[in-house]
Image (tube, rainbow, N blue to C red):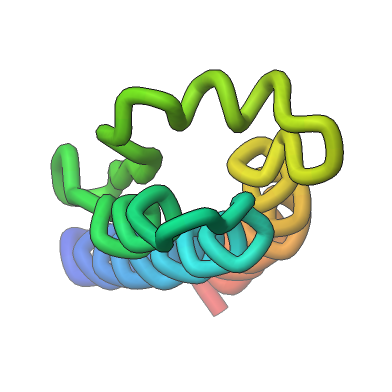
Length: 103
């Protein structure tokens, strides 16, 4: 059974890691995004937002972002690729916290 202190530490570690990986993925997505005037790229970099203590999201509010994500001939899937590239390292980091519980 987890003590209150262990639980608080776990939540803090997961929250900090989630924020870091969300910001990292958003930056990677922006780097891979097609660039005409920089508006799409800037919207992605500026988009990470916290939903609650351990949940974050990012994307773009630019009207044509979805079209670029799914239909651009050479740069499509830039947001999805940033998620895929970070999914396993993020999962391993969180699993490491869980494995370290009680040690």
